[in-house]
Image 1: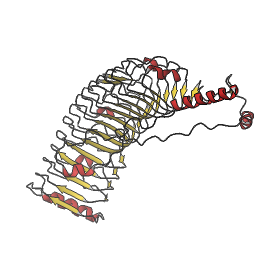
Image 2: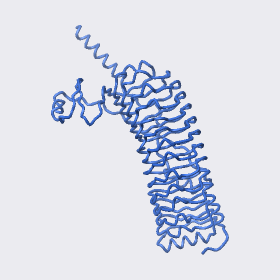
Image 3: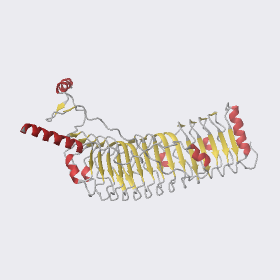
Length: 459
């Protein structure tokens, strides 16, 4: 009987521990992390709104909920023995029975579940972990610093720090090297910097830093790769410090950080995937830091930059899938984009002070739409004279100083509609002549003309 009671007690304790380590799903709202725009190309915005400052500053984020991973498979001892026999001679056996190949980093003590920290006692479950395979979520923690986790080097899933109003230090995570999925850091009003994450060099998913009221700088001194970089609405942040960052696999978005003045530490960034977006950072004067950027697979989106003066630091950019440059009050030309020759998606251009399309002179093909709208000081389109093919529509509208369409009479194909509207100084015959020229080149699309009231004849 005594043995039976002991067995029951042990089983009960095991069930209790298992319950405390159970992965906690959806403990915070993911609805703000979706980086997919509802209307990615936003063509209609620039065809219908003549206000060049009417760009959408912020994105709505929503990330699909991460599905629970199954518990680690239990392999029978006899199968494990067979696996051991098939390993290369280079494999290494550890005293606890785990096996490591020389090509893989040592995971140390692996904790296979997910964990949350809301109080100091929660730390005890994971204080010896070198690797956490699931999530680590710190939420509503009342203290100023989390101690006792200096053994932690890897987190396989998410690492999130949410609504910890007194947290001032992340020194307890100074040995953390990799996060397999994403990080969401929000609502931590006393946290001023992330430099305590001094060994973090890889974030596989999103790195989303939002609405941390005292965040003055985002410093990740050895970070080399991030999946989706999203920094938004940190109103005290003045700079980024990521001198080793080389690649952002999907998004790289810096949006509405009111005091951000510089991104010059990004000197090693060469590649961005789905979108590079810098919008609504009203004190950012220069794109210094993007000097070695070579590729943006998706959209280059630079909008509502009230202080941004030029694009010259993009002079090494040789490919951008699409371009959206609008609402930048001080930019007068697009110099810096000269290495780009082909656009696979749309080109959307507007700007109050933009007087030239210089920078686009080497583009020969645009597979999507070309929209030049609310460019208030441009007089002609001669900088587009090397453009041969437009796969979508051509929209030239609300350009107050435009008097000529010269630069478009070298086109050999247009895939969509021709719209020339509300260009007050443009003679209507310019639009008529372009229509005739395209029809002679084989174009059979429709044309929409209105509001082109300029006087004078057309050659």
